[in-house]
Image 1 (cartoon, rainbow, N blue to C red):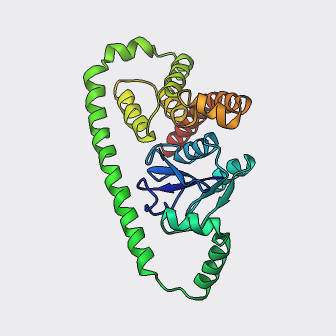
Image 2: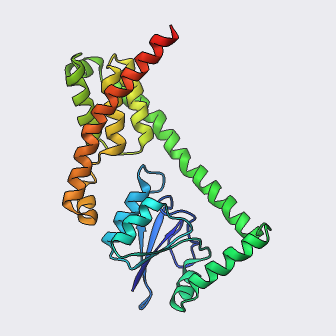
Length: 266
């Protein structure tokens, strides 16, 4: 039997992550042989929750043990016959032993009842949460540095002439191109905002930039093979196609609403 546990560090002595999808690693443990596999979880990446779900399903785990799991992620995991147990803490080794003895669920229920009666602060958990917050802050520092470098690289290697050759000024065609480029690119959503801002500076229409940003965060052609293997080819293709079309529709709707607001304010 295999279980999946999010952690900030690899190893059985690592503490269980507070949230599925935001931890650096997913520890896949065979509780019968205690074979351990540390899978990078993509902390800080956009769509971390669905990435964690895809990894858990692809690793054919039987249960996910975590501090918190979003309702959407829990729905997909349960649909693939994966048990989800939340509200746990401690090290991976401790949680595994509790799970093997069948004490984990009971322990969680007792803990919740105790917390509802007494609103005392657990110093150990408080220190752990402070350390988690500090780790997340330091995780963001490379991202902020990457944003600064991205602006410099964009200005250095992407010329205004190149942008003009792609975006001709035709509203519909430019919006389609924006949605296509956003669908192909991958990375943190923050990058889409930076690139979108630079495109606006180069004179690209707000329609195209809006479609670019929306498709960046909702359409994932790069991750399509993994999504197909985890959720099925029909679901993956329909979801991506619908997200692509909606990115264009939403971009037109957003710009129309924005122009109406501007007209009323004048």
